[in-house]
Length: 486
Image 1 (cartoon, rainbow, N blue to C red):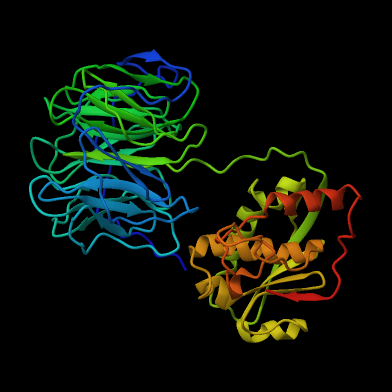
Image 2 (cartoon, rainbow, N blue to C red):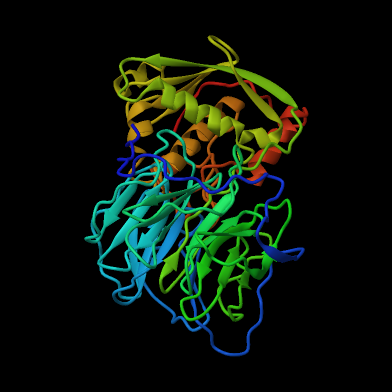
C-alpha cells in the first residue's frame, strides 16, 4: 500500500501572472540554439554540482570533487540536490525521499520517506538555520535536519504536479513551483507577481531566487526564464522551442545571473554570469535531474515514459481476478499491470496490444493470497509468482514486498514480475545472466538471484525480437504449455 504524503503545506498561494501558453518565453530574451551543449570557460568561476538520475555528482566551476551521496547504476531515481549553507557538502534527494549526505555534510533525520514510490520532487536548504525542506509531488513540504515546520505553499492531493522549491534570500520561508507555473509562498514569504502561467500545461521546470536583488526566475522546459517578484529580465542561456529539455536553474551567489542545465548536461549562463567548465555531458540522453551551488537548488522533472512507437501486430485480451484474501488492493495490481503493458519498454515493443476485458479474455492475471498459489497446480508454490496455462499468477507476498534477492525498487520489481510471468504466457522459458554486470534478461529468475547481472524489469532487445518472430510466424508457437514458477 502506498504511503500517502503528509501534506504540511496547505492552501494555494498567489499564482504567477497568467500569460498565453504560446508566449512561453515572455519576459526573457534568449538566443536559440539547436542542441544542448556545454560552454567553454578559461578562468575559474563560481561553481556547484550537477546531479544525474543515477546519483552521479559532477562538479563545475570552482566546486571541489566530492564523495558520498548515493549511486544507483541503471536506476533513474535521483531527484534533487541541495548544498549545505552552514557547513561542507550537501545532500542528494532520491525519489522515495531518502537524503544522502555528500562532501562531509552530516547525516540528517526528518524529511519524508515513501518506500517504493517515486514522489519527491525537490530539496531546498535553510539559509537562516539548520536543515531544510523536501517537496513532494503533491505539495507537501517536509522539514529535515532541524528546520522548522512551515505552512503555506500548495496542496494537490493525488496530483504529482509540483516541480521546484526555493528559499527566500531576504526573509523567511520561500516558494514552491507547480508544473503550470504557479508560485506559492510558504513559511511567511510574501506572495509574488510575475513569472509565467500555463494552465493545463506541465512545463515549469525550476525556480531560483535572485541573490543580487529581489525576486527570482522560473525556468520552463524550453529554456525560457521568467522573472518574478521584481527580478530583472535576463538574456543569455539557451532556448529549445518545442523541446522539453531544460532541467534546472541555479542563481549565481557571487554576482549577477546564473546557469541553466539541460537534460544532456549542457550548462548555459544567463544574466551576466560567467561561463563555467566541468559538469557532465551526455549527448542524446535526458538524464540530468538537478543543479545546486551555494545558496540554491532546484527540483526535478521526471520525463514521461516513451510512447508506443511499434505498430500493433497482435491484440491480446486479459482480465484481472483475485484468489483468496490478499492484503494488497486489486486495483493497485490492475494499475501496475496496465502501466506495464502500456509501456513501450515492455512486450508492447514487439507489437502487442494488451486490452483488458471484464472477464475471461486470452489470459487472466490473478492477485493471489500466497497460501492459495499452489492451488493453480504445479509448479506454483506459496513463495513465488507463477504461470499455469492461461493463468498469470502474481503472489501477493511478492507484490507487496518484492524479493530479498532483488536490490531494486518495489515499483520496478512489479514491472519485472508482470513482464516475466506474461513472458511465460507468451511461450518463453527461463533465461540466464549472459555476463557479469550485464542487464538481466526479463526471463531470468531475478526473484531468486541476480547471477551477477544488473536488475532489469523490461525485456531485452533480443527478447523483443524473439517475440516479433513469433508474431510473424517465424518462431515457436505462443500457445502456453504447462506451467512455470518465477
